[in-house]
Image (cartoon, rainbow, N blue to C red):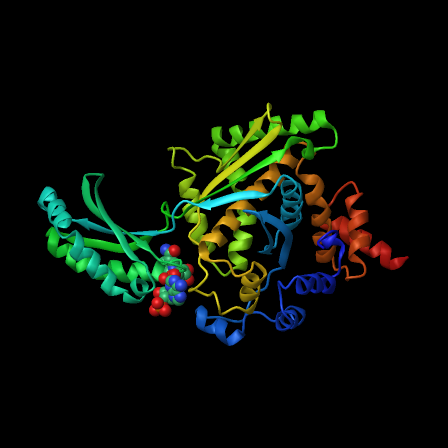
Length: 423
Ligand code: NDP
C-alpha cells in the first residue's frame, strides 16, 4: 500500500491515506485547500498577531510500534528528516519495528520556600500536613480529580545555593490526557500561602517543573544486522560503528548535542504536528540528557555479534497531551491526531519515542557509512533552486544540475536557472 509513497503526487498520497481510513473526505478537502489555523483563532492564541505561519506537513507512511502499523504526521522545514525517518522505519519494520512502553505519566511541580527560621520544624509541619496539602491542591483543580487524576505525592528537599537555603516542596500529579502546566500551576498557586503559613517562611514561586522525570518513555528495537547493507561484511561494519557512535555521543558533549539534535529532528516534528508544546519537550529531554552529571547522547546502540542484531534503545521524558493547549484549535493538528488513529497520550508518547530512535538510527547509519551530506544535499539543491526563483516545472532540472555542479550555492543555482531559461 505504501510502496513508493515518496514518488506519488500529493493527491495520490492523500488518496492512499483516505483508502486506509487515516483521513476522511472533510480532511481531504482541508488538506487540498491548505486550510489550517483560522486567522481569528490565531489572534486569540498569541498577542500582537499579524497572520499565521506555515510549515510543510508530511507523513512517514509506515512505522510499526508495539505490533501496530502507524502513519506518522510530521511538521518540519528541514529537508531529509521525513525521508530519513521513513527509510529507517522501512528497515526497522522488517525486524518487527519498535517496542515502546511508558514507565509513568505524571507531572511534577514545585513551591520554593525561603527565609525559614527553623527549617527542621518546617519540614516536620509539612510532613504532618501531607493529607491536608493534597486536599488543598486537588480542590484548586477539582475537574482533574473527577477525571480520575489529581495529586499522587508530596515530597520536600532542602537545597542550599550561595548561602541561601530553600525548602522546596514538590507535588506529583496525574494529569490524565493533558500536559498539565495549567493544572499544576493552579494547584501550586493555591499551595503557596498555605505552605508559607505552615513553614513560617516565604514562598518565592510555585510552578510546574519541565523536568518531567515522572513521564519517562522507553523505545527499543532489535534490527537484523543483515538488513543494514547488501554486503554482509559492510552490514556488520556499520553495526559495529553505530555502537561506537553511540559511545562517542556519551563521551563527548560536542557530539552529544548534535546526536540529540538529530533525535529532535523527528521528535519535534511529531510534537509540533500534534499541537504539543515542543519547548517543554526539549527542556525536559535536554535536562534528562545531563542526569549523569554530564550532557550525553540520549540513545544507546549495541551490536550483538552472537545474535547478529543491532539493538537500539532510548528513554525520554515525553509529557505530550491529546487535549488542552492549542490542540483542537488547528485543523491540521486534528488531522494529525486522526492520521495517528487518535491514540491516548501514553500511546502518543510511545510513538514519539520510537520516532526519535528511528531518526537517530538514520543519522548514525548515514554518518558511519556514506556520510550525512549525500542525501541532505539533494534536498538542499531543491531549496536553493526555489530560492533562486525556479518555478515548479524548473525546480527538478535546476536541482539536478546544481547537485552535479562543483559549487552548490545560490549563485550557481541562479546561473543554472538563467542558462535553462536562455536555451
Ligand atoms: P489546558 O489547561 O489547556 O488543558 C487542560 C484541561 O483540559 C484540563 O484542565 C481539563 O479541564 C481539560 N481536559 C479535557 N479532557 C481531559 C482529559 N481527558 N484529561 C485531562 N484534562 C482534560 O492545558 P494544560 O493544563 O495541560 O497546560 C498545557 C498548556 O500550558 C500548554 O499550552 C503549554 O504550552 C502551557 N504552559 C506551559 C508551561 C510550561 O511548560 N512550563 C507553563 C505555562 C503554560 P476540565 O476538566 O475543566 O475540562
